Image (cartoon, rainbow, N blue to C red; front, top):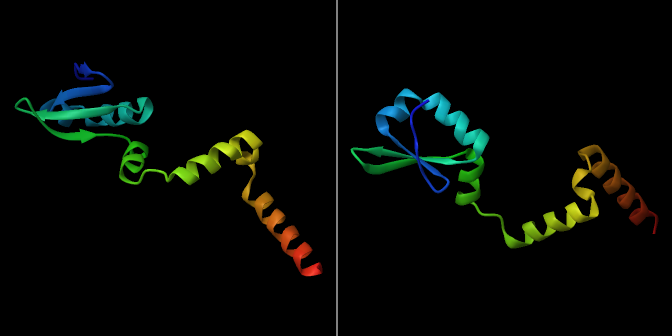
Length: 99
């Protein structure tokens, strides 16, 4: 593993070290949810980050989805499986057609 300089939660590494230790840097980014700034001749050129962090940055969660997710966790409904959801939908549809 390359010797790394820490700048807050971001690791800074030279392009040569990044190329030499790319696999271990990928593992670190995924496991530690950290990012790596890759420098060439002392100039930052790129950032390596987890796919989860990239998605979060590229398409931030709308506020309403965050609120719904929090309510779901509080109510315990975040653990419902797809078959359970299908059964609830079917039951609701059956009740609506009987009215």
